Image 1: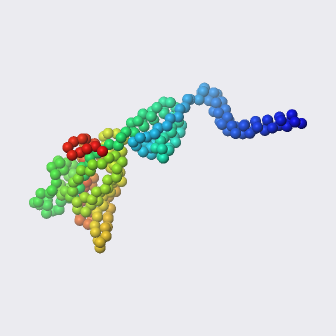
Image 2: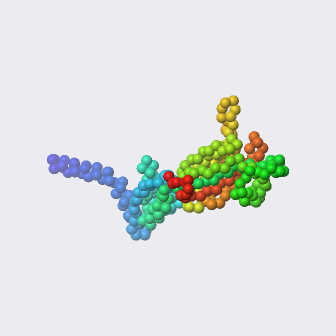
Image 3: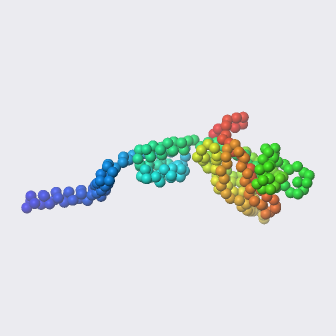
Length: 259
């Protein structure tokens, strides 16, 4: 009886172990038998952890989605608190993702954006008074004429915004207008996205600030080329409004230093 009890206890322990590992063993057996019967051994997979130093892992994931949706990329796990991404897939696919991450995870670049706010000139201005517009803006007058059918402009304000990729910029411009946008990190070196760009008219009535939104949009500005944004008509003044953006990566020079 003692011998039988000993055998029963041993069998019970074996059953517990089988239950503990049964799921993993079953998956391995099914995967192995299916692969062998169909096309030989299963493809090799590797696991790699990417910890980003300069950029947010959420932004990296958005860039990598086309590669992660490929069957060659088995899975990806995001750890926002560690700013890391764990990828499991074939060696070739993981290597491709590694190159993409290395190209994306670079220091955030400082950028200069010249912002000029214009409004269409009234009839009086067109008749005789010269509009207060820089020669740089006059140089793109033909484009403005073709796009908006307006020939003369008055400059309300012009400012050089010195920012860094990933920053949100807010600035009160001349004429009581407030401009705000997020400098979205550029995926290549040829353009920068100004995301959630808004222009508001700011007034003070009865001792309180009142804002009226004129436009909200997102734009891609090619570096070194003017971008003209027609924001419609400000109903309070009856004039058409335009914003001209001119962006370039900041370079060291007199009065400008890198952060």
